[in-house]
Length: 255
Ligand code: SF4
Image (cartoon, rainbow, N blue to C red; front, side, top):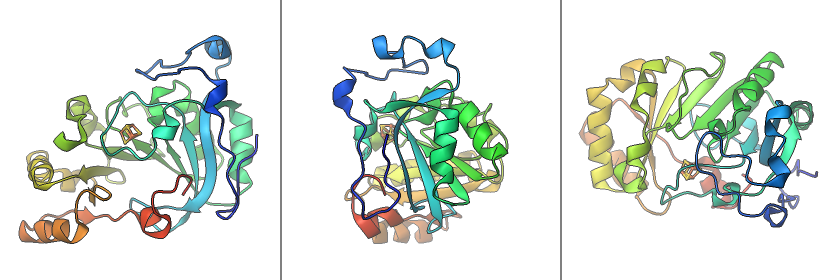
């Protein structure tokens, strides 16, 4: 398998043509077919869409060189999703292969993302292995699955899906009890109603006292300056987050 280690190189997309209709529906999303029938007997492998080196575009480490490990599959279908190419396809890799690839970039920060990484049963083992190897590890998760068992060394960057996402019913509110000061909760805001919903949730659960809170304008749906004005007008103790990778590279995958 070839992954690019340079933004100017063409990336090798893991061909979905090899993988017939692997629609992801939940925790135990894989196996879809004959390619995955040995899932239970190969406990240290994960299905990977891509591994690449870029600048962190979101969260409190935005701007820092980071290796991204994008796991294949997601049980949600947010209206603004920009990683639909990770829903299916990908290629199995065992943990040592993933660690070797990550190590080749020489970065200190590693983000495990998706799709929804926790939809793969071996994601916790990957997170633990990366922590053991000395990386600063973060996990980007939809908030729909249980985050409480994730290795405590991992920074959880958890979405709370807003009404306009189309997936608000999937929020696992029990996850809020597991948040720690180092963790981050992200609201992707599509419109004024989303903002008011998010604002009310921040206040109701006193989220800003528990962890970092990020308000991010949905790309090409919500004006960032307008959102900034709303945050200031309501004196919200949250961070406006612009997606740095979108500013730098547009919506191009792999950044
Ligand atoms: S949870 Fe993330 S990857 Fe899944 S559909 Fe929503 S935005 Fe896309």
